[in-house]
Image (tube, rainbow, N blue to C red; front, side, top):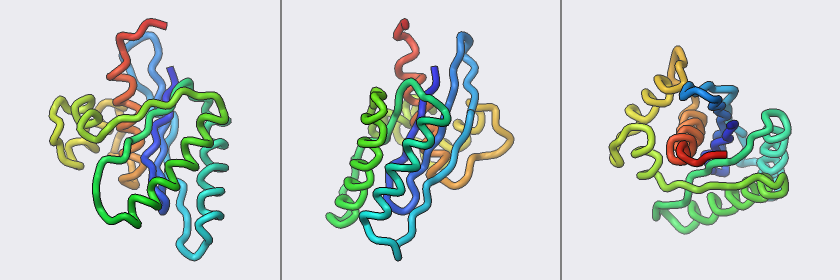
Length: 161
């Protein structure tokens, strides 16, 4: 199974692709961020996120996508921009006919650490360990996206295909 994990955002959405074969071994295929620039119009930034997401899907051919659900209450402007970015990301995925699974932060933390209140360092360390990486993936948005992919694999590991 190949899973694309996405950490939604407008400035720098993270993405990570994880492969799980017949064994329980997880392999990181790739990860990164889609950096957008505040000087660009909102429409151009959303178009860039949409286009880059489709390129990632075309390159790595994931079977499913896992994305963090909106969960927090910052300011209404922050929620609106994240919502718009999520819309671009979701549109890019569903137009490629990929199933999308959304997870809240507590579920993601439980799936990786067994503790729903794990801190960022614990999460990043588990991503590094579970994927057998030499160092914690950077930037944080990419590490978060890999965590989402791992969460999906761990949460759905008993589903027989």
